[in-house]
Length: 239
Image (cartoon, helix red, strand yellow):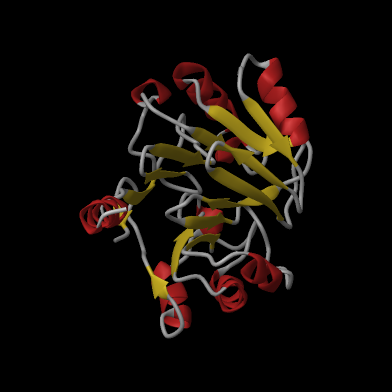
């Protein structure tokens, strides 16, 4: 392979789009190269979401839902998958429910397992929470360009350290609202165990019960990790 071709390949790799947008609460959109990945896409009724109708979403590759609580977007995920042809990813029982509702492409897994969708690997992590269908989970999503850990709704658990041994996490998305999930102190301990390069706090200030100051979380972890506090609709572009 010539030096010119190698140089062009290096330029293409460098220019791959890596952008993460907070849609409010626990909802995120990750645009990585040609892939558009949604996490817990609570759109309808989400007071923080800049998107007001799922019909505005024209492209999606994967849609991941951590559990079936209404504020994590299972109903909207089904609509997005049906509108765009995206693949739904969730624990087995939730994926089965999505298929029953008319989603053509579903991939179900379970805690501790990996699934692959084209060049994207999804690892199902534990989440200390509750659900009505299956069990709650988090996701480590690994693409050739970026590895993202979306913790879902969870309390702190010591096995987070093991996740860092399995995967080098570029971006960790962690709840800090307390009451139903980790608060800032517990999430700071999670950062210590996970060792991500970047952390984005979420699942706070949507309701009075989860009111928190993200700056408190930042003060607790900024010496060991880059913290990005996003406003709903704002994006983090990763070089």
